[in-house]
Image (cartoon, rainbow, N blue to C red; front, side, top):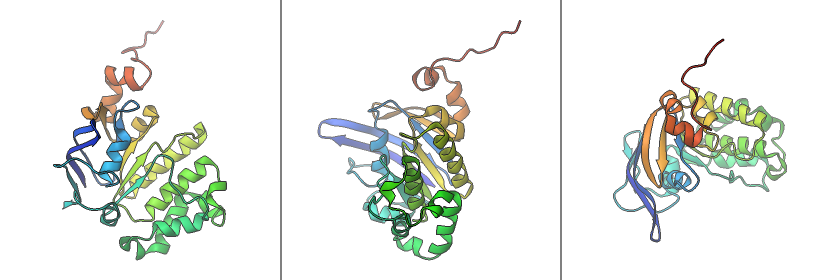
Length: 244
């Protein structure tokens, strides 16, 4: 569904991404593991066309080359980004934010039915339809950001640190909802500080270090990798548990 090859990005003399390649299938959750400054946010922005990349990248969505498209045309092609910090329109109501999410041409047919599906995923948004977005809790704003992105009718959803600043209970609710989004056939590329939770729901993952992919595999494989455990999961787990 989403295929990325040879994606490189530089900020001045600093090379933030170097020849990144990855793929995300339909209805698949893929997580990106990496330390702060590894290039994770830059990667999502580059795929979404928000930042200018170096020549040579190849990005295909559903077999179509979207490498040279502007950001709004990438959304029309079926890819949506939920940025870190949510990026909602704080002075608009919940309903107005969702309606703006349905602005792309691909989303206009069936807008009402899609809105019902989003509200079924996030019942609190239905309760707060007339509420000004900035007055909601952080968790509710994150639900709105994801809901607005889903209103664009994406095939692939990019999420940048969706659990940042949320309570543990809200994190569990959010990740349960992402599993339901996957069940609807949407592919998810997830950058998430909570590596434990991201690997719990992911099918596969990539490890990003200093702008380059240095490892990849199934979520189970990554969870059992000692290097991944040390770097992102709080240490190496014992291979066996003794009993006495």
